[in-house]
Image (tube, rainbow over all chains, first blue to last red; front, side, top):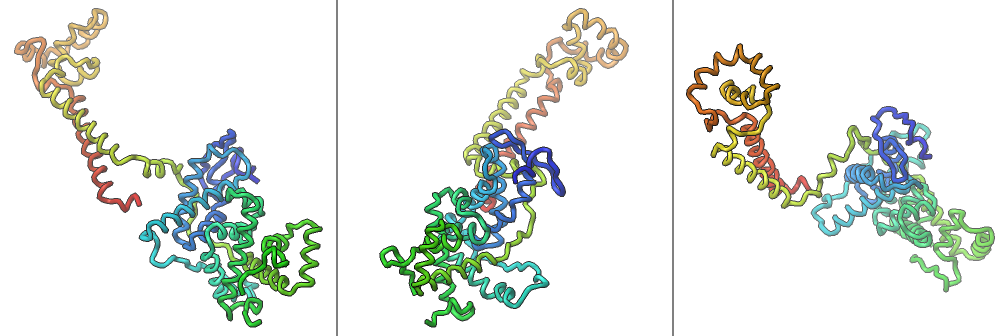
Length: 204
Length: 209
């Protein structure tokens, strides 16, 4: 997968920005950015529950990655980058906790909806509005470690193994974070009642 | 309904259910889970609600950042100075420049630099014809010979009146080479610039978060 970023470079639409890894291989960093920026941004945005601040944090994470690149010694580039993004998000969360003045008055979760798909059914449309808000809020309410595990595995489709690499945690820890995160999210969706599918209603 | 499926209860564990949903259990383990589910409505409900939750998460749309993150220029220069320069460094550098400025200026004022400055011939030639006239004799024979040959025609016209009036080793102020004025100006400006940056940095903490 990582072969696209290495020499010979075939950059399109951006300047070639050559970086050298710790194992001596040369990559175009901008090609790496293009390939992973969306995944990094999605992780950061859901970790922060703040779409706008996530852009700055993603940019900062990419700058850190650029500077740390000589320390990348091959292996899984995606989990290496996602780990940096996750750390950057966690740093901001920690700073906000320590100094609440850094938080926005109300976290900005602008729903910048992608244009409606032509084949979108009514069910899809419902998910896009209230249900989706309930899910995002439920995610945001999870403890950060559970949130990261659930976002990586369930939203971004990482394997447990890659999530464990990304989070720098053992496989057992990741399993437990995923299962507890899912259960807590399920509980919060249940608590919201009516707008959710019948399975979440508490009328038994 | 709170979660109350522990090992002791005889129900399936949360992690088992999660892994079962993800198809991560071995055939034997999955068989055991399914056998339990067949006989336990609570666990069936549990696994079903988790399955729904996972499905909802999988269908969350990908968020689109509003700007590209590709770098137009290498990002190091923009990021490196941040928080890396300790506050005292600005003061120290400004003081160093100010001190150097003061030293150069006072040395210049005393006039020590003017006549004997070990500058190369090219600079002196540009400064004053009068100086040139006094320095040329000290050049080695071979070099001076051709020099005086070429200069002989033009130099004397302007140099002659002055030459008579001044001693060979002079301390005339205007003889200070322009290079020194440039150095003085640069040092002074640097001292002011670094000192100013130091003060602004204090005043505008917002810029540094």
